[in-house]
Structures are given as C-alpha cells and as structure tokens.
Image 1: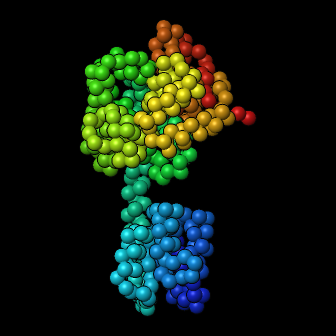
Image 2: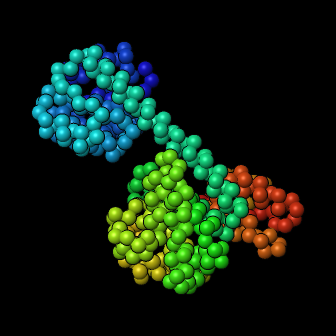
Image 3: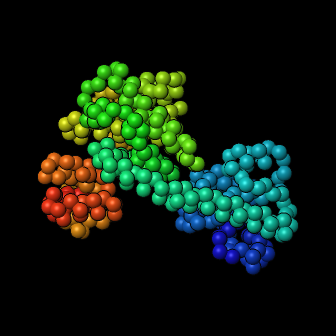
Length: 380
C-alpha cells in the first residue's frame, strides 16, 4: 500500500470486482470511463499506475492512455482488453507508450503481478527523476555559483537567462522546465575558453568581425563538449551546442540543421541571448524586442511570440531596495552591484543564493558597497 493505482472501465460490475479483488493489496481508485479518469489524473497527478480497458464509449483506452501520457508522464500505463488483435496492441504501445498489454479475462494473480511490476517501474522512473532534479541540480548549482562569483560579468547573465527561459516555457506550456533552466544557466560555460575582451564585446552587443563571430561561437562547442561527458546531460549539451544556430539554418555550427530540427532549448536561448545583447548595448526593452522582430527569420516564430507575451508578466514587477542582511534565496537583482572602486561583484538579473549573500556581506562589512541592493519584487 502507498502508491496509488487508477483502474478505468466503463462497466460498474467489473470495477466492483476489481475493488473487491485488489483493494487489500493496493491503494486503488476507479473511474467509469476516460473523461472521469482524466479528471482524476488532473486532480491527483501522483498516480503511480493507470490500468485502462480498451473498448469504452466516447474515449477508448488508447485515446485515454495517450492523453494520460501527456498529462501525467511519470504514471505507468497498462492496457486491459478482450480485443486481442495485433493492431490494438500496436496502437496501444505506439500512441500510449504502454508498459504492459493484458488480455481479458485476466486472472487476479496475473493482474496483481502486472501492477506490482508497474509499481517497480514507477519507482525506477521517480528515482531517476530525483537523481536528475536534485543530485544533479545541486552539482550544477554549485558549479554555476562558483563561476558567477569568479566572473560576474559573464555568468551573472545566466540567471537572467534562466528567468527569461522559464517565462517562455511556462507561456508555451512546456514540460521539464528544469532542463531548459539548465540550458540557460550553463549556456556560457564554454566562454572561459574564448578571449575575455571578445566575450565582453559580443555580450554587450558591440560590432564584431566575421572571424571574431566564428571564434566566439566556439564557446558553444566547448560548453557542449564539457557537459556531454556528464551522465544524463546529453540533451542539455546538444541544446548548448546549437545556441548560436539561426532558425533559417545560418549561424553555427555550419551544418544542415535548421528550423524545428534545432533542439528546442537552443531555439529558446537564441532569442534570449540576442535580446540580452541588444539590451546590454543600451536599447530599451521595446527597442530590443523590435530588433528581434526585424530579424525574425533567425528565430522560431512560436518562441518569439511567447517571448513577446512574457513582457506582460514583467510589468507586474517593481524595483525595491532591500538591506543586504535581509536578502533571501531566489531574489532577483535589478541592478549591477559594484564596489566603490568600480569592480563588478554581482550582475543585474542574478538570483541571490547563500554564496552570493555572503559575498555581498563581506564587501558590506568592509564598507566597499552600500547597505542595500535593488531587487525585483511583485507590485503590491
């Protein structure tokens, strides 16, 4: 008992029999048809396993489990049907990503064993997800914190990118936003291998030659090569590799990849990188956005449209001075923090973490910065 099971069938007698047979072994809910099941999945996304009959009025099992895959991707999906033809099995596996296919009538021991196997599969899925989202994320956070402190001019921008990419992803309704945030946070990791002056000029939107642009684009390859050696980072590395690639196929790397074949993370970060460079050159937000639209063939139109819509979210934010002693994790800096000798400590747009707070406190104690910093807050 513990992890919940959802069993779906349009026949009340079948559901009653299932409850009688399995309730002593599993934490079981039942639904009479696909619509009710989707409603229950929406209300409770923690179902470990869903078992559906195939032939149901309105929405058959393949249709239900296909939608369940989109709505609750970690839920293990199984099909139970009396229609044992080959095409049904093929459709179920291909469209619903079915873990197991069972034929009616199904003995209680066989059904119980299949559910137990489904629960084990769910445990493997969630364990891997925990590894990715917690253990790996902790390592990435430590890495980016160190890089942000050693080169705030470059790596302070990545938090700004992270904020932007989350806004776009939410606007587009994308799953696995944490992976896209990693693309943003690690997008400039390879810039340490490029001449510092060139990186600074490029990120500030200054003019660079064709040869210099090719040299700068190497940072994407360097960053991708560093990350691809880390388990489970292959997709993130590939997005970073293609961040300098334009939607029309121009840009870097020089290959035949273009439009929707460019990794989604690369298409998102491309818009953000170019916007940030325009804004860093002195353009207002609206002027920078106008320049993106003027070269719209460089960008995924869906991504560019979603990015445009996110500016309505930013209009609800205001700048507020906050004492350094009262900073909390996750606050977003509204201005660069520089010392009295004009040394940049933390860049505009960076989130405050424990290491950032300590960094600022050390300089505050030595009277090298003021007692407050400006942060973005929700308007009251």
